[in-house]
Amino acid sequence: MPSFLAQATQHVPLLDGQVDRDKTVPPLVDGDFITFQGSLNPTGKVIAIKRPRFLSRDDKEMELVLHGIIIWSLLHHENINPLVGVATFDNGLSTVTELMVRGDANSYVQDPQVDPRPLLLGIAHGLRYLHHGHALGPIYHGDMRGRNVLVAPDGRALLTGFHYSFISNPPLDMTLTSTVVGALRWMAPEGIDGGRATAERDVWAFAMTTLELFTRKVPFPHIGSESGLIIRILSGKPDYPTGMSDMWQNLCTSCWELDPGLRPDMMTIVSRIEEVCVLTVDCICG
Picture 1 (spheres, helix red, strand yellow):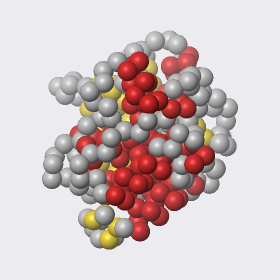
Picture 2 (tube, helix red, strand yellow):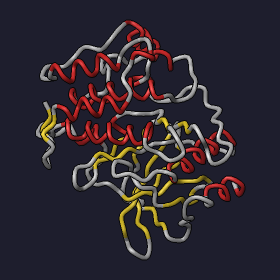
Picture 3 (cartoon, rainbow, N blue to C red):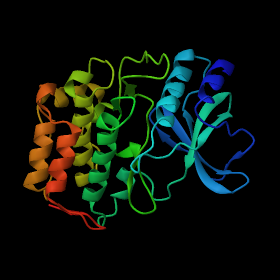
């Protein structure tokens, strides 16, 4: 633990002694991680404290947390959730961020009055920054989905969840040993056999997130088994929901090309969305 902690705190503040976990609020479990609510002293700011769900002394688990922290600490953009710092709890390393009371994008769109299109434009801007706008070169998210997008008080989409990300020019040795990257329902066919995050896989996952936010359901909600999901992913493009315009259908279709080289990049995707957007406060997209 000490060596991981030393590496992490070279990049972000160590907040031990300043973080109180609120035990009256039930934690949120999402995959391999669990998030607690707390407060940051002396300001009293309400925060989210996220750590691996299953604590162990396994170096691979700590490597995953450290990997996400270091990449996250390098990111500064209006569509990236800011990392406040790190803290140690239960003999594990946790990330600390400001709590977004509107929750994640999947939860937010459960209100039928919420238009998902402004969120999708914000997600596209965040991915464009990662792929094309960072000084160190391309960064690939690796786990793009609604749960990894928080909603700011002003309605902006904020990307989070960088534990499976890949950076082309890392500031230190950051080889991630995990063989499977991302959540299966959003995964491109070529990702099923493992391997690191790529631009093309992020593009596929962006289209799956588009489907998720338009339908207000996770992809393939009727399929419960892993084997069933794999068969469905390999069998062809998902069905389009009622109410998705031709523009969004065509965009998703291009992102779901089986040949990764035929998928558009995030620069192109942002341009295509903005071509049909009236850039007002509400960003009403066609």
